[in-house]
Image (cartoon, rainbow, N blue to C red; front, side):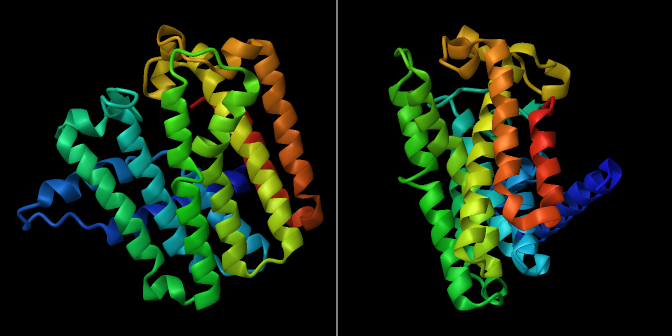
Length: 299
């Protein structure tokens, strides 16, 4: 697969997701609570890499499923991801004023409305994932996908990771502890995206294990690259200031390993991710290129 073809496929997945999300959450200007929908759409339709939907689509297709059947779940996981970003930016969490080059939700709509927009996106995600459109793939497959999403988003995954992150603020943390936090806070949802795609296609155990190994390596590489970009990234490209980790005395892979070792770790993990897809052969070329793309990203 050539780079232009890869880029075109990424744009296709992003556009499919954007259109579906906009349809699922309309503006509703006539409703008294229209500010809620405005806040939900403000963060949800702000763009971004759409990595998690891309993984849902591509693993579903890789394992023999129809990409069209993945749309509800690709949107659901993006809603959960967006809710987490809104809540992460709140003053009681990371207290960030910018997200994707725009004022964060609580700066734009106020803290209470931002909190409620996040709540609404989380619950909307499960409304979408349990809809008749989602169930068209087959009740057993849809139920498995919903279960994967719920487990990854809650006390076994993302929320637990955020709690661990807060508990370790200002404390000495070693690489092992940092990996444990990130495996839950960031990695759980990336793994879930790949495994949801597998579930929708009815993948066998071999396929699920390969997807899990790929997504685990990709998720860790993604987080380390985030830490690297906070040191050497371009604020104009990132859409937010750099150096906040150091200013807040936050333990990162760069602070623990150094910049060069962190860069080497990203490359090693990227190769591990690609090796995990060997059972799929040439059919996994897009996902291998995705791993390379995430490793070299500048935002």
